[in-house]
Amino acid sequence: MHCSRGIFVVLEGIDGTGKSTLVKTLAKRLGENKRTVHETFEPTATWLGDAVRRSWKENVDPRTEALLFVADRCEHTLKIEQWLQGGNWVISDRYRDSSCAYQGAYLSKEMGVARACEWVDHLHEGTALEPDLVIIIDAPPKITLARLEERDKLEKFEKQGYLETVRAVYLHLASKKGRHLVDGTRSLNDVADDCWSLMEKYL
Ligand code: TMP
Image (tube, rainbow, N blue to C red; front, side, top):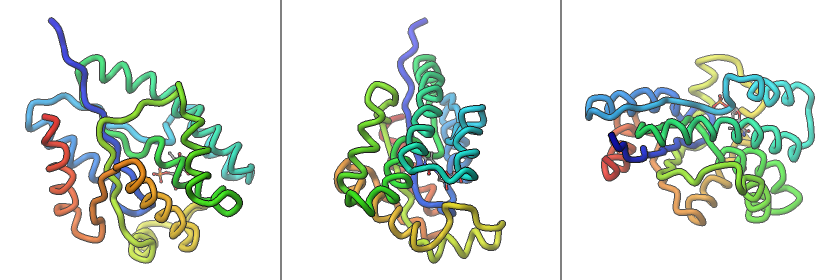
């Protein structure tokens, strides 16, 4: 039986925007609409993802860190490609825009936002896919950090000033690459409804 290619959806945004819960909610709705779906995330739960997490403790140069993320993503992409070819939807909590936003935020100090973004995006040539739909859940770090403080202790990337820059890079990507922005300051139900109306067009 011929099976048409699945749809690749990515949720992006700074830490604490509720992406992992949203992935579950949206996957459930796809299931209710008789679609098969793979939920996934980056950095992955493989040794390459571990290499990325290890680099945080070693304080490596942001370029090195970007290359590690891209290596993890390259292997992840092979799996995503298989799932899509099997006719499954794939929803990923983060993908290539995360590297542009997070590693780009560091590099933007020396290169400016536009060039930093371009430099990181360029690393993906031939190693990553262009998703069918990228949704950026947007919220100010002040709000997301308050949520995270309730949850657990803050990690390396979760500092307000830095996250302001990460958010600025995401907003740059939204205007340059036509990413969809969804207001993440509201309840997760409202945010999920907005994401779902963007996804419904692909059903
Ligand atoms: P998580 O909290 O969504 O699991 O992601 C772990 C951290 O990794 C998060 O703070 C964002 C960061 N990150 C990058 O800096 N670059 C990337 O390419 C990805 C995928 C994540």
